Image (cartoon, rainbow, N blue to C red):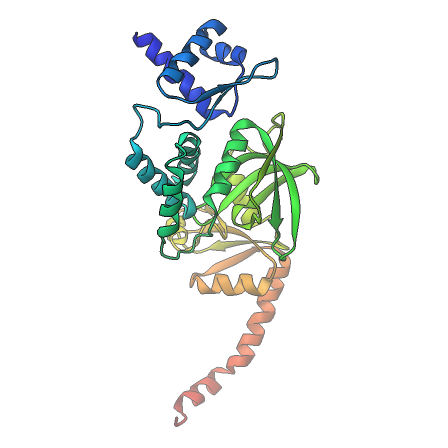
Length: 330
């Protein structure tokens, strides 16, 4: 009995992580016969789990929405409370748990009974969160993308670029990355034939699923680091590298990972790398940190800083002129 219960839980877990499974695939993953899979599917149905079957060679099993919430999970009020909480976390991501909340919300909405859906929609409309620095994202967009990633299906969506123009994109989605302030999608762009990083808050339409795809080798083992590289350096005209005369912990307390990558340079210095379209903006930002720093690259930034220092010195006047100005009557 214990072995059978454990197998049922394993089967249910597999049905939740992928949109559709064939009988042979499930049997292979679970190490049982296809006949055992069919029996276990019937047992889950008897317990209230809505599992649909499609006949034929291309058919399979799919977990769908049912008439009642499956037992041993949540009652109606608990299901609404959890769905609302997950929706809030997904809409205003909390660093470290945002991606998990989207996966959980996708699973819960998949089996949420139809009678609870209007209540859930009303609760979402009635709850308002205080504004924050986090970019607003429709949780439904994230759940659709998350499901497509699990099912390995292409998605198509309208995307607004940084210049305000929009275009239709067709991509193979691979990973959602939560940076705390924004959501990013790492995907292979089929038209541009290359890896791209998309801001989820710039999706102008709900992504629609297309045909399945065969996974490609990822552009990096650490996709979170890959996204940080993309958003802090790659899209910009200048790749600025400076050495700040302060320990890494002190710099990290004031410099967000959204704007730069930081590396310790001994105990008392930190290497900061960041992308900028304007050297003036880079100079103003670094000056605002109120830390001594040394420009490593590019050479254009060093030249710009020297020219700026001459202009600032001329604007301030000589030491004697500044002293005289301080003694003039107001």
